Length: 377
Image 1 (cartoon, one colour):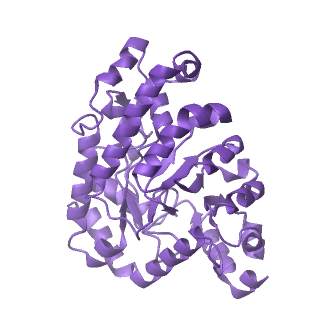
Image 2 (cartoon, rainbow, N blue to C red; image 1 turned 45 degrees about the vertical axis):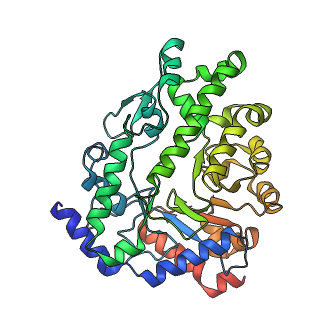
Image 3 (cartoon, rainbow, N blue to C red; image 1 turned 135 degrees about the vertical axis):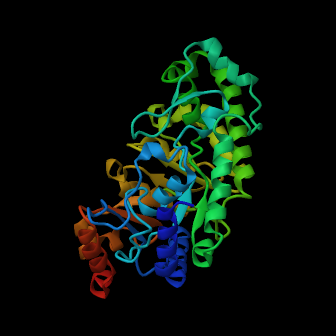
């Protein structure tokens, strides 16, 4: 273990408060099950201060070095920091993952993965239809393919690194990597041509989506012996607790109509969710037209937002409330948090995020949000 990681783990072993983290967990659980809570959980994003004791490694260095990957997960991930728990007492669960971006399942099917500068890895789409059809020749349950082995190795090393630190070992949630969703992986494998092929080659795409769903379910279950999740019925993604055991990414699906999603994509999303014991769906952008379709999925237990500000969240909230489907990562402004108006807008059933300009500002906003006067306004 390199000295920087060892120093960080020793520091976190001293400053992480298991009692506080358990309290955070209970607040998330109650909010996600629509129970009455004193306030919805809030996670604040912020840039690390220039003088912060721990600096993340350049992003491109982590993919061949699990020690650096773990270091970065603890220092700065999703614009927040476990290492800064001593300075900001927001409602952040302490989570780490094998951070190989969006390409893991696509790589299993032979996608050529590229990683340039400090950008996340990306999958180059299959250039010809014939090359694309070669994915049907792959065994979706052979996890020796693509980047799957390095994901497994990373989790094994995480457990090894954490073994000497009982507080971290028992407090950190080791969560699933980004396994995307059936349609997002399909788009990674073929590119934007899939939108045309949904109309012209629907039967072929059904076969591929079936293989992708099989791979996603299989690899997620394969990883269960390496991760450390919970409590039962809950998991974590995007530094946030979710209901269920997996989060499907549906960023590409926002480009298709609701009827097309219902008939061609939803069956595979539901298959993944059901096989994993329920879960959530994430989308970035404006996806209001898909919300009614998501809410009809029997195994859906939460909806996660990339940019909630681009959606009519009040309408979505009341639609989701009828099925007690919680909303995660709902953006809140400083005014809403400081005045307490967000508490009236979303009294439960929604977890909140806020983007602060600095760690100092984050502390000020969190202090105001937690004050009894704000909660009772």
